[in-house]
Structures are given as structure tokens and as C-alpha cells.
Length: 490
Image (cartoon, rainbow, N blue to C red; front, side, top):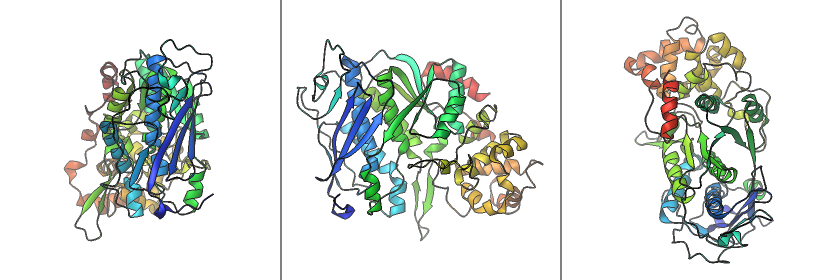
């Protein structure tokens, strides 16, 4: 392999993407300059897939969006100023959305690596070329032996632009693909949809056995989608490529939208609460400037709003992408989860259990990472103490070595951790609530909070009740939200 030099790279290329409906395998191909092709594969169970007419065009459009969004994993290795799309074209609206995903989704990556990506990321926006056979290297291959009474060029071999307009109504069946990550949030969504009588398939990407066990506990149909990154990327990392956090929720969202078109499902459901829209406030060394860096930007409202609108415009008018928990805060989600102990022995929000090259399931909770700290703190006001301690195996709030971790959650002498945790005001309200309860107030960290931190806070901002109020900013289908609003408010 030619040595990888990030400084020598001038362009990042989206070479082509292709889906074989007979095998269910999609190929996403990228390259730096004229270097070797980087081929990622996505495998959707259920092949062979019958793709005809408008459905074939929707699959093509969804595949291209996936190709463009998943490219962030590779682009970040060199962050060149020139971006090229070799085998199809996008419009200005899609280009703007992608620039937002790359710029904001790589915000933490840029901060940690001392990079400034503002003004650097530009996707080429041109009008799509006229539909004609053989105009590009992009194709969705039809199911072998399938019938195509009105085939588009992209279904006839190595065709180019499909002839069917984007955003058509496909007549998708009422069925939800629900993302599960093994934590409390997705389980709250799954049970809420069950309450509403929505047919659903619990879906995850990758080979996590922890998520598989949690999905199995739901006793619902499951779907495990495979994703294999180009192996060259790991070699590039060893040779000094830029590396760091990427907007993985954006990638998983695009994968599931593509799967929904193939599997005839009209909903792709995530479980991102409104707290995800708020990042960490980073103060400059001289204390004069503050900027926001959101570790979970692609879980936030801005991404959901823009991506959902793009799906309606480019893929299918009746395919709904939304987060069921968007109207809720992290504390409101914790309150919902605490109502049932069905998943106590199965769920885990500890990120140390999930790694790109395989999980390390020594225990479901490490007890020392920001996710463990926050989930413990968020559940404590709503769950009996013995039950919570049994879930984690110990009382994290009675361990003085955990002080720095909880201080960061409180935004006390530190910024909010770069993790998927709630807002600082939620952590402060939860801790203040525990400081008033006999069963918690003598624990070391709660006691220290009451003694050292609480006197510095505005008491009017420490009430949990306002943080449990339901918000109206969401993309949940109106009929479903009408059913579930009372359920979440109870």
C-alpha cells in the first residue's frame, strides 16, 4: 500500500455507490486523489429485494444520501479542501445539508485536533444531468429474475439518473424500524410504540452482543444490519491520519432510511431527546471567548429537522424520519424508564462497552465514565435506591474518587463532557433533589454538593418540574403524537 500522507492529499472523492438487490449488499466507494479505492459495505438482511419503478428510484436516492453521509468517516482522515462527486450530482439544498452535517458533526473532532473547518467544506452542487442510460457508474441492481414494466435507466445495468421524480409517495406499509442502542432511551421509545399499537422492528447496526441481548428482551421482530468499514482506513490511522469523533447517528440514520425503503416501512424512529441539541460550552484560555461544541450534534434537532425534510424531498413523501423522544428532556426520559424494571438486567448506556473494533463486555457498567455517572444521577430521583444500586453494582454517589466526573456533569469548574449526557441544568436539578432526600443526602458526593456547590447556585433554577415539561418541537406524525402525549405526560 502507498504510504498515506494527510498533508499531501488535495481531494476527497465520492467514487460510486452500488446496491445488489439479489444479495442485499451495498458498496460505498471513496478515494483520496487518485489513490486506492476505499470500499465500505452495508448488508441489509431480507434479500432478494424486488425494486421496481418508484421504489427503485427511492432506493437509489437513499443509497446516494447514505454514500454522501457515510463518507464523513473517510473524509476526516485528511480533511482536504476539494470534494468531488464522480458518478452523480446533487442540488444546492442537499449540498447545504451535507456541509452542515460535516461541519457540525465534526465539531468535536476539529476542536480536539486543533483544526478550523469553517469555510473549508464545500460540496459541489450542480443540476442533475438528463436521464439517459449509461451516464454514470452508479446503479441499484435489480433482483435477478424480477419484472420491471417501467424500468428506469438505473435498473437496466450501469445506468445514471433514474427517471422517476424524487419524493414520490410509495404507499409504504405502516411499520416502524426503531433504532436500538442498548440504553434506556430506545427502550422507552419501543415500549411507547408498543403502547400505541405501532408495528415495529427493533433495528441495530453492527455486531454488538449486548445490543442483541437487549433487543431480544423486547420480544419483537429484530433486524441486524451489517456495516464493514474499508480496512484501509485503519491503516491510514496508524500512519497518522486525522482521527476522532464522527456524527455516527447521521450515518446510522441514513443506513436505516435505505433499509426502510427496501423493507417497505414508512417510519424510521430514533430516540434522541431535546437535551441532545445542547453542547459543551468551551471557554478560551484567555477567558474572553466561549463556543459550543456538541458531541451529539447529529442527535440534535437541527440534524433531525434538515435530514427528515431531505428524505421527504429526495426519497419518499410517505417515509417519516423522527425521534420519538424529541419533546422530552433526559430527566423526563429517565422518569419514563424507571416505571418498569423489565430491562434492568439487560440495558447499558456505558460507552466503554461499545468500540469500533469490538466491545469489551467485562460488565454492563464501568462505573467511571461520564455516561455511567449521568445515567446513575438521572435515574436516582425516580427510582428506589436499592434498585438503582443493584443495576450498577455499587453506589456511584458515595465514592469520592468520582467527584471530578460529577463536577463536569454539573458544569462546575469544567465543561460538560464530550459524551451523550444531559444538560448541566438537568444534572444540577437532579443533584439538588437528592440533597433533600434522606436516603441520598449522606452519600459523599451529594453531601459535598450540598456543602460546597449548592450555596453558589440560584435556587429558582434547581426545580426538576420545569425540566419535565413536554416540548412541541418535533417531527412525530400528528396522529401518533396525539396518542402518546398523555402517555409521556403521566
